[in-house]
Image 1 (cartoon, rainbow over the protein chains, first blue to last red):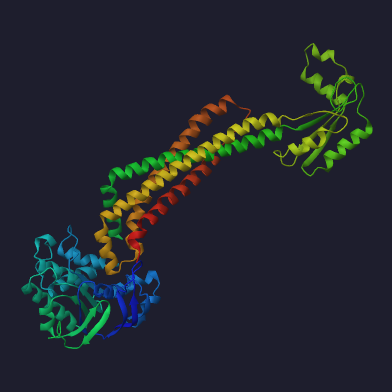
Image 2: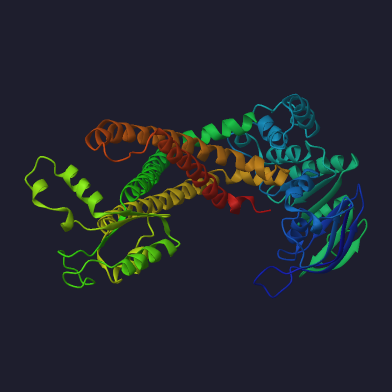
Amino acid sequence: MIRFENVSKTYEGQHRAALKDVDVEIEKGEFVFLVGASGSGKSTFMRLILREYRPTTGRIYVAGKDINKLPGWKIPGLRRQIGTVFQDFRLLPGKTVSENVGFALQVIGKKNSEIRKAVPETLELVGLANKGDRLPEELSGGEQQRVAIARAFVNRPQILIADEPTGNLDPATSVGIMKLLDRINRADTTVVMATHDSTIVDQMRKRVIELVDGDVVRDQSKGVYGYQ
Amino acid sequence: MRHTFSETWSGIRRNGSMTIAVIVTMWVSLTLFGAGLMVNQQVNLMKADWYDKIEVRVFLCNATTPGDNCDAGQEVTQEQKAQIEQTLRSNPEVAEVTYQSKEQAFAEFRAAYANTPTADYLTVDQMQESYSVRLKNPEEYQGVVSSVQGLKGVQNVQDLRGILDGLFEWMNLAQWGTIIAAALLLLAAALQIANTIRMAAFARRREIGIMRMVGASNWYILAPFLLETLFAAVISIVLTCVTLAAGHYFLIVQKAQVLIQGSPWIGWSHVGIAMLGVAVVGVLLSIIPTLIATRRYLRV
């Protein structure tokens, strides 16, 4: 589903590479944790998948396509196949929960009838069936992150990328979010999640890719956060 | 599509005062630009008309009129005449050369001064033979004038274009002044539009970020901004066209045409050309700064 072939990335004006010669393959339907300290290259890894940047060297394949070769006007098409969730939720404050989720479909030109069907289904999936008319600021952090996940998943992408999705949440709420991501993963969605949260990684027992200063130092199936 | 229009409308409302400022700036600058186009056409019309009416006239020596290339008291000789005519006819700028004899000049003179004492005062012999020269391009007269001016037997070359040149120089200045002022104002309008759009895009950066993240097309993201400036542009263009039409009607149709009938004046078709120019520049003026101002937010 996602393949990095000898990928290096050095940002302009910097000497140190953010990623060094990364060679990783993520299969369809896998759940992968990306762990490592701040600045270890986790975010760069994710941004490269979204083609927010091009790698300095190497190739990246997403859903079988070499995304380096993607012309600019096809990048929106790539991103429609990838749902994205962030630590800070990034919801639109003036819009209701339903509108926030529907927005993702609306702006890619889906019909209203489709939106009216897909939004309640997805809200149901994330456990917010009765909160469609609320505003994000009326919800708890965990609920807001569920809205963000609903928005990322409403178009049924093949890949879900989550950058520290539990970073702003307390442990109990984080568990709920992880259960939700696990459910989405079981629906055959590839999930790549960057995190600092060792408890979660240790509990889930999924594949772990650890980055240190841009190097992949560990790639372990059913791994834990750190060596013990 | 509905989202696009509602975003456009809310953008216009949110930036109401900025939109008005943009419209006023564009209106004034486009009006100046349109006026420049009209003045330009007026100058060209006058040039064509006046230059066409006035010929270069080469007067030949006679016994009574002194001139630098005349031998005192001597008529122009046949050889001199032949050479002058040959020089004129071989010049590629010359379209037509007409000879006028003393008798013809006398008849013309009598007609012009009929019923005045002068009419009886002069005789045929005091008249001068001349060549009237019509040019292919009326503005290219200087070469012809200088080619015959120094020839033996030429008493004088009469050329009213020299006088017109001063007038047209002044009109050219006015024309360029208008165009430069219009260009500066158009630049100011473009910068103002770019700033307005930059502010509008900044205000909507969250939405834009999400739209890019979920894969909205660039066109979809750009459309509200483009429509917003196009809305301002269309209003300014309409206001400008009304202003130009009013200017033409009140200044030219009602005043100038009545006061100065001898001169050609631009008509509605010329105003139409100016309006077309205004419309093209107005639309470009709104689209280009918008594309530049939003580029940062659309970079993938």
